[in-house]
Image (cartoon, rainbow, N blue to C red; front, side):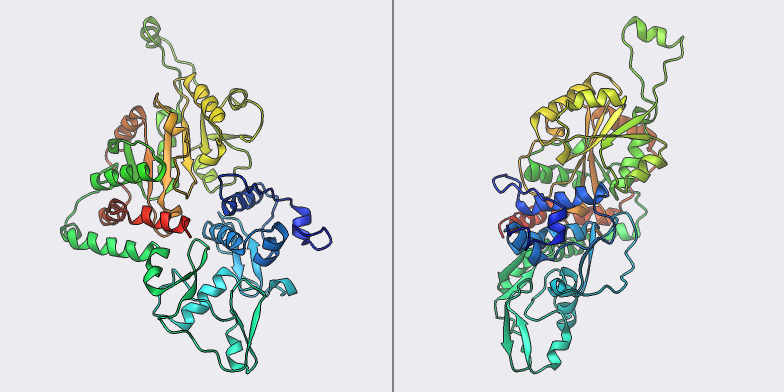
Length: 460
């Protein structure tokens, strides 16, 4: 890292701790820093983030690392980019920002992810927008100048002077490609297909339509918990993705995370929690009014997700818990008087925390843990769900985080007791995801297209 004199004002104000010895990849550490800072309001909306070059030089990390972190932040709605201006913080739950003009500074001359993709799309519209060939400055006006500068690397300051009109490379040339995960790689045409899952997903969608034409004319209502082929495919994928052993019969499919969470919160287990009595006390319970327990869900400190509105709509209060505290998680949960807990997979990064939160849940029949998986890497990482032997944990995977935001598919793995309550309460409803959409995802997963894509990205 450079001296304080040479460091950017952003770096002087915010100390980003990156552990280069950690098993967690640097881009993901950087991503998590910004997510936490944005969700905790330490970085207000419209805050200008340092350029890729600046952050790379200040922290002595590769530009690809910064690019990948920024791309993931942008795809998840935490930041947005303006051509020739840079990256800016936005509220992930708000509408698209008003892209008003901003003054360009000397440090902002590097093309943004969005500007590169848009420029390449204009230059060669027949190519898919899941990758971009970058051999020119994002400002297309350079084509009109005789003294053209070509960026050999779109995120580099190194310039190569060219005194002739820019010539686009042929399809046989090796090109620099910016993947939809933020990686910048050199690739020949035959290797480009693996850099985005969209083309493979389109093929799966075509297969689903071809093999299920009868569904287009029929009146079949999707099964409440999802079609069997998709539930089986999800169980197989989760085993390969995180080595999670899942019974397909316990998989519930939905159209998005908010929908499945809202339905769960309306179940009696969350809406009207109560302690189950046993033996003679159970008989006595029928003649007395059971003690009512006010529902309250523990959420991570600084919880500013769009899911806040889901808890509000379900009329269930939330209480924030500092899961990164050195204090016992079980003790914090006991003090909070929460009846259940909603956590992200990153909140329980040690076996001790997992054990503590499970021990807390097992002390009362009405306590449950809802674990939302935020990981995008193939790993045997321990999840609370993987240590859940007494049916106290609900695991949620949102496939829009892995494929594309436009592919709204979420899966929840429910304990048997919760599953029965879910079926009883929503027995007259069908799955909100269309059968054809389900069959498309099923084909995409069962043929290992997603797991192969994730694996190929990690090897870049």
